Length: 436
Image 1 (cartoon, rainbow, N blue to C red):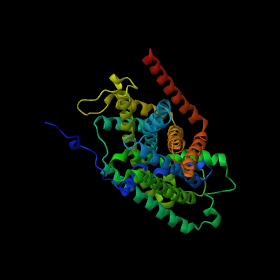
Image 2: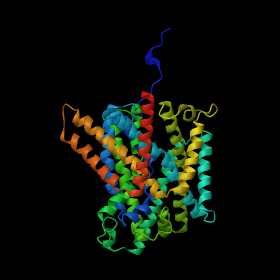
Image 3: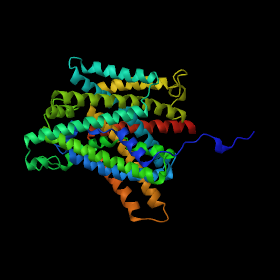
Image 4: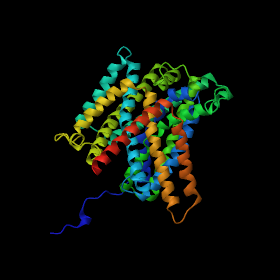
């Protein structure tokens, strides 16, 4: 009996543009700027809105490159695939190694924020205890194979949007009672007394964390109606919507606080701003939202990092006997889940949230630069019919991402550089062993 290939199960192209945009907003989260508000305010001397807008420009240009590369590689929406396919396999490996650092750092910074938010509610419990608790919870949940469903993520996204609306309403009421001067309405964008371009760009290099996750839209290429158009449109629209929403959130927060420093806790500064605008109840609501959002992200990122190690083992990039082992009962990479749990525990006790976020952006900007370079080569360097925009958009995107990457603080560059160096050394050793 002959089985037709057409009868084999296939992914259905059912996702519309609206579905993609909603997915992107869920992944990034409407409360994305809450975690970085205090840090960016200090680094950029109060120009948080400006840093968000700069980051948005970089992400919009990169989103266009992602969308265009998804047309070429419709079944593999990943930066290292684009870079390896268009530039060089070695550069693709470096891009993939940089992305691996992001996967590991994501649950670490989520653990830090969860612990800080928990301390706001129960300050008598020391920070290391909270870190150990959340790292253990993430590990235990993923050992049981528990994953958040798409429906749960949608409900959480709606809930977070409601919290943002509550904050904005409280901020508007507070500001109406205070009556800020006209000049105060401009200072979140530009304050001549504190403005410094290097400081603002450094802040923008951190604020870009607000947009991280938009590239995940390109991984859905095989399930999208008209992917050649909708992937790019959805990626750009998602970055634009998140950028506008984030700008409104931090603009209101800056006006309410009235200064760019003096936060009781920098990592959870937004919760304290909410307390000033809406009292103790709103403080606890925003603080709880920060905890819940990062708990969900942290648990998912923990499993994502474990699966990344498993995928690398399947490609023989890591020792498959240990990293490629699957628990027969739960069908999860148990060894990797345990390893990531230990790394998260040690990382959250060692790193600050700011350093972890900057290191994550260090890897992300490398991936973004690679995607822009790949789009430049594909649509300008190798194209028969060239348009001016085919050169300008990816080239400017590459330059802006390079500028933001270079503006990261030195500790992040050193730590990120050490990670890349270790990856290059490991890859070279494996290549030499294979040749020998």
